[in-house]
Amino acid sequence: MYAIVEMAGQQFKVAKDQKVYVHRLQTEEGKKVTFDKVLLLDDGGNVTVGAPVIEGAAVEAKVVKHLKGDKVIVFKKKRRKGYRVKNGHRQHLTEIVVEGIVAKGAKKAAPAKAKAEKPAAEPKEAAPAKKAAPKKEAPKKAAAEDLSSKTVAELKEMAKAKGIEGISSMKKADLIEALNK
Image (tube, rainbow, N blue to C red; front, side, top):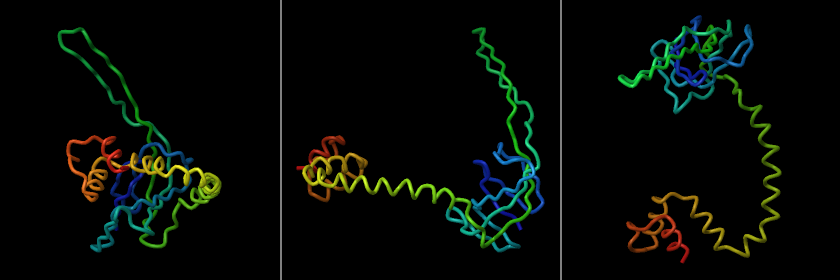
């Protein structure tokens, strides 16, 4: 059984008890980490492909240690100009060991963030209720703002539906003005 998982911005093919070096994680050494962005899962010939991820699938791993990778030399030179620059770099890595692959029933790590976002969303809903009266007074301005958020292609389709001619040579501002008439 193996899985293709997105870890720290990169995709890895992992199996149970495999050692993987990923970009530095903020987890302490010895702690367990769960990656829920499983893109592909192969269970003995039964392949499941996510769109984009497989719901309920996860990879559980343990952080072994934090380390630095091999030194990479960056040398820049422009011939006949006397320009030479030499720099070095060592990438910060985290060594993890995959402890298991869960095909179904894994819990998402995101519910804590969702709870934090909901209280912030409630005050925003209360504020537009107070501003409802000014929007009724100036409907043309609200329509212009709504159209300015659309792309030129969307505006051209709307103009074509209304039967406006000469839209191929119009710019975004001209399209908005023609649609507001």
